[in-house]
Image (cartoon, protein in one colour):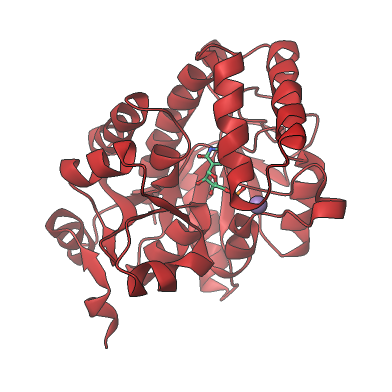
Length: 302
Ligand code: PSU
Ligand code: MN
């Protein structure tokens, strides 16, 4: 079977790719496992319109009935946002989701892998997965990092949540050769807050410069992605004390309930949202929009 029998690219995305117009990939786990309904559906549509308003074509990626879809319609987004039977698929789950004809939302890792198949070079999300705080004993390191080490797709995120060990995540990215660029910042952001206490590898102040670096990396034949860290807009950032208390409580609950494996991240996200009475969700939406905007601007120069 050829690749095209597994991969279905929407007409809109196909046309943009053919004409070498800017295309921005968007993930779907943020919809199915990252946010509650109906805000997840609203956000999925808002991210797509943000990309369009910035002159690029959105390509939300998921597996629908076993077919890898690049560019979804409203019905697909609805299914992902309110069906209980959507698998959370990281890269390793793609072959089985296709084989079994499943509906699966793609994480950052799987979205990168699928974007690559469609020759899409940039992708916007909220936050990526990383090294979990207790990774020394659990070995819980997100497949997002391994995918960044081998797949040539640039990812715009607002850093990582401090549900993770931010320092270890950055060490890991250095080890596997992933450049970490701070957009208008010297500090790696911690998702809800603009600061984390950790520096980025280097800082660039324009979308055009970022695109240049991505292009240079590609022209040098270096494998793997580039991580662009875009801090949450100041007005939506959350007081570090408040958010860290919520994260601490969520981590304690996960431990008490012995949550492991791929359930860990969705569990923590929903607990933090619950504890902050939706405040974290509001920030999450705003930063994702800001990332979609920046990714679109970078896409223009790739
Ligand atoms: N972090 C967030 N929001 C999310 C995710 C992570 O702040 O929605 C999702 C992304 O899809 C990411 C995935 O790729 O969780 C990572 O899951 P894990 O930690 O199981 O690798
Ligand atoms: Mn994990």
